[in-house]
Length: 109
Length: 109
DNA sequence: ATATTATGCAACTAATTGGTTGCATGTCAA
DNA sequence: TTGACATGCAACCAATTAGTTGCATAATAT
Image (cartoon, rainbow over all chains, first blue to last red; front, side, top):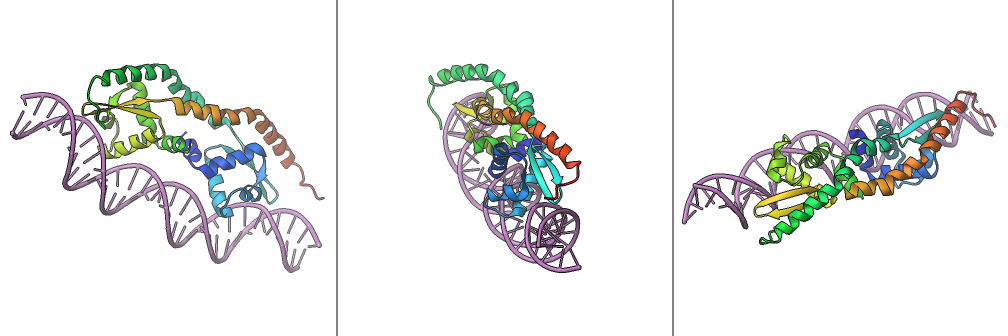
């Protein structure tokens, strides 16, 4: 799960996922065309995405095809995001209560 | 949005969110007790979380209270995660098709 | 008043990250 | 068989990050 969050933290890697979303199964060379960096840099980004299982790779001859795998993203939602959403109402009402309480006293920074 | 992904990329920061989920409105000092690092380090993590609007801060006298704000997390889901989920079935079937294709002889023309 | 508590700010270090260049390997096409 | 291509691997560099220490400031308690 840590690998997934780390992988999603970089804008270039999110852009790669976006590219695969637009056109799935692209080769390394094709993916490179959309990013302003060397092929080797893109390779490293793709390696991180693969480690996080956000993409799957299939070799076809000398070509490396990349496929989007949204499963880990779904997991983020299931195991982590929904957890916080459930607290949303409670959190906000508590915040509101505390804000009103704070307004009775002098402000700080 | 980039700030949110960056903020979520670190396990210590996710742990801080977890702590606030368990007990909302904790002070800096309280949050420090759960992490094995200096107060100043925790302060920096909390600053990043605040920048990403994942937490809200309320001053009460000399105490700094921290409140969870799950709104950006909900945004991730709405604007980004659901986008990939929609493709999940297509992506997997495409992958399967390509895998089967790979097991044959490559084309020669 | 004074000490204690709760926090902020800044400089510094070490580790990690994002990128580069150079060279090597395997596949396809002529 | 040769040359071009698609990619891999490794060393290196610069920027960012995660953490530290030291000192400063503001609020509270005695």
